[in-house]
Image 1 (cartoon, rainbow, N blue to C red):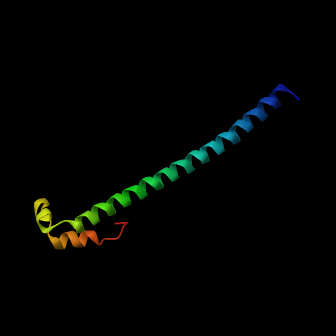
Image 2: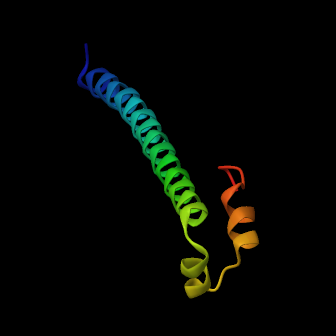
Image 3: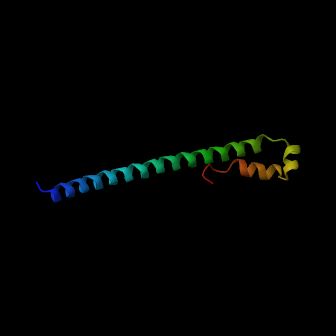
Amino acid sequence: MSAIGTIRRDAERMQRSFGRETHVRRFSRAVVSFFVWINAVLDRRRSRLALLEMTDEQLKDIGISRCDAHREGIRPLWE
């Protein structure tokens, strides 16, 4: 086989492996993004539950009425 053929095959092999590497990176980023989103949703839920557990005096200190705290506390996770 000629040197040019060998170089071409090596270049094609490298390009295929680079494509796989890119897909792995994209998948990894998607998985990390998903877990970051889940963490944000759970943090929001914890904050909303904390609002529901506060006393009237505590709510008054932060300037929120009981009605506003209840409305915020029962919102769906994705909002």
